[in-house]
Amino acid sequence: MDTMQGLKRTHYCGEVDGIGNEVIVGGYVQKIRDMGNLIFIDLRDRTGIVQLAFDDTTDRSVFEKASQCHSEYVLMAKGTVRERESKNSTIKTGNIEVFVNDLRILAKAQTPPFEVTDKTNVNEELRLKYRYLDLRRKPLQDNIIKRSQIAKSARDYFYENGFIEIETPMMIKSTPEGARDYIIPSRVHNGKFYALPQSPQIYKQLLMISGFDRYIQLARCFRDEDLRADRQPEFTQIDLEMSFVDVEDILEIGEGLIKRLFKDVLDMDIPTPLPRLTYKEAMERYGSDKPDTRYEMEIINLSDLVKDCGFGVFTSAIEGGGSVRAICAKGGAETLTRKEIDKLTEYVRGIGAKGLAYVRWVDDAPNCSFAKFMTEDELKAILDRCGAEKGDVVFIVADKDSVTLPTLGALRQKVAKQLNIIKDGFNFLWITEFPFFEYDEESDSYLAMHHPFTMPQDDCIQYLESAPEKVIAKAYDLVLNGTELSSGSIRINDYELQQKMFKALGLTDKEIEEKFGFLVDAYKYGAAPHGGMGIGLDRIAMIMCGAESLRDVVAFPKVQNASELMSNSPGIVDEKQLEELAIKTITKE
Image (cartoon, rainbow, N blue to C red; front, side, top):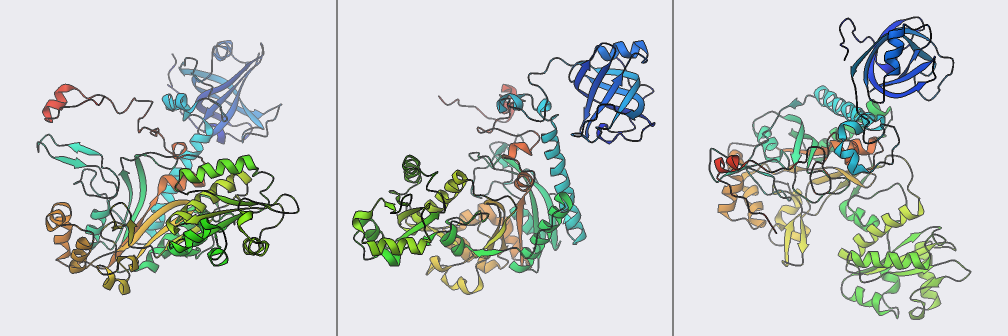
């Protein structure tokens, strides 16, 4: 095996230029073309590919070494840049090549389990098992590099706006934040456990109480929850907190960040201020608190039109305090056949609806699943309200609002994908004025929608105990293309109000002391008004890269069951380690 002695890289492969220049490059062999008296090697690094050339005038020892190379060998090559005879317009260096006079084979490689190419149909499980090979592929390298650019741009923005980057602990006390904690046993404090932070929430509030005024951290967060395409058990949050602010101040700094990221990383101008919807408006119009506004198909309320019709499904829903609502799939009749509508009916039943009424307008007269219960005028009124024409399909759900709205919201997304009507682009949206509590039918009580430090709107505090359904939180989310990027709120800074809030949430004095005692004590010494938010770095990277999954923007991701295939994590721990921690494992059948 050769060494690098005497060679020092002068150029990255994708940045070689200047005909006549002498350059030294290093990288992995992408491809070899051996034509007897001519050899071409495509050498790859993270910036791109450059062609190395060898011919019958090349020193024989160098030529023979080139002929021994295979895919993924690690090489360093020294040579002169010259014009390439056969140009390649698909790569940056496609007009030149390096005529090599010194070649070093620094490491040989076995035949990899899959070819390292830009496009691949290789099973993702295999690629994750050999993630270090998968990461050699340009699309993934570009994603990881772009993620790094996003992180740098965010830091630059906050530094320029007077924020201080402060690290908060990774080993903390377990506090309830919605998901399960990952816990760490303490060897020193037998029988006690640390938790990995689901967010730095309490610590960043303590930093505001400490007088730091503007805090920022690219914080690692951990949640033991079921995974989806846009979730990982460990993730990174662009976390911020500010003192002496209200909602508008947080939204302004958040919009500035978005504008900066998209300009720095994608050279794209995002117009601000960003659009806003209240939670109520978002649910009424889109059936979701994180709506995708890149397409229309808004929810339409038909209740006033059908409250006296002859269709019992509609009238009973309204009499029970619910509603009858619809979406209109413009031009969807050809794609949404009866067979497809049957599938959609099963889909909505699977997410809580009792059924799905529809009007499919293919021929001159619309085909209506409930026509025999309606007069012609009643059906015409429904179609007019929906703006339905020949070629359209109208879907209708009748039930409580807690069923109709999210059902039609989910159906709207599914139908939009089937009809391929989702436009390209980046549609941002603030969702504001969230309810403070949500009603839980199982427990017949109101539960908090947010963490217990969220500030209610000033005029709602009086309703905390008497009418919780009227309480609106000073909380806000940032949504991009139907994905929640960020969640935040103004925090309670008054000791008495915080105690009142804990009581409204049903916490006993003992629970308050055990879970939040140190924060409550801190409030006694004065806390400035403060608020903040956390923006998912992985999520915004995923969307900015056009990736389908967080796994495509995380270097070493977990899969659906929270395991990491490359290192076989999690693994079994040595019995001696368990003894030191006074832990005995019980294997579930």
